[in-house]
Amino acid sequence: MESIQELLGGIGNGSAMKKYYERALKKQEEEHLTPMQREARLLNSIRDSYDPEEYDCKKCKNRGYIATVELVNDAERLRNYECSCMPIRRSIWRLKQSGLDQTIRSKTFDKFKAENEWQREMKDTAQCYCYDGLENGSWFYCGGQPGSGKTHICTAIAREVLYKKPLQYLLWSDFIRRTQDKEADRQTIGEEVERYKNIEVLYIDDFFKPVKDYKGNTMLPGMAEVRLAFEIINYRYIKNRPVIISSEWSIKELNDIDEAIASRIYEKCGLYTISIKKGREKNMRYQA
Image 1 (tube, one colour):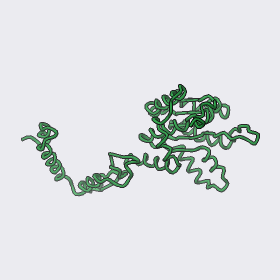
Image 2 (cartoon, helix red, strand yellow):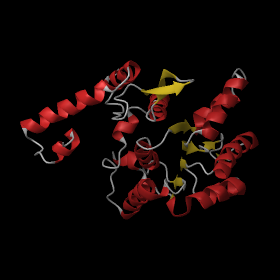
Image 3 (cartoon, helix red, strand yellow):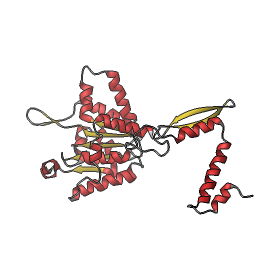
Image 4 (cartoon, one colour):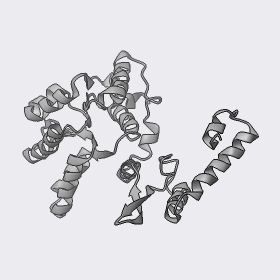
């Protein structure tokens, strides 16, 4: 006698008969489940409260966990395991906390204006990084002219990364300001540094933000700032963890600040290094 599975193989997809047999198969399967297995199946069928607009996970139906039944000392135990979508959700929450939640909606590849050759090169390099470089463990660096779209292109990359991996956003100037605050909790700062070192993908925005002195001369970063940058960059370099960086410094200029940092970044970025030559005509903010 043919099994239900064998019968289903010979029936058309849209037929009422197939739907009947599918229901019969489901009932047959449920009859062989233990009460705890039925409970796990019920839990895994429920859609929960995490926002699907934020991230829609087909695996856990936005519950954040998957119920399983394990055999422990000949007794069944129901356990909930965290779904693989949760690190991505946490990255999105951190982006929201950083103030990037609105920015990440507007700074997409589609909205990046690539009217000139240098802009098209930026966009092409960034998209190639998303589709190939990231998976190979490469880094991405975009430096040079202020207002040229460096943050836009790096944020567009971050948006794509979030669909695949956990990412942490780091606005460098704000971070350095916190570390220099004498009233800051040293333990909290230390925990923050460890998070930047260990997150799967790190996005550093406005790395070594240039500051001018009272005469209008651009000041180089202080030794404490350089040491902290080297600690984060070198750790991620050794552990082969991707970094996305925007900066007003070109790689050559960065090399004049600290060769150890610049050479590590350049080695890891390779073809995914962009240096936009200075020129007021490239400042898109004046053309908005």
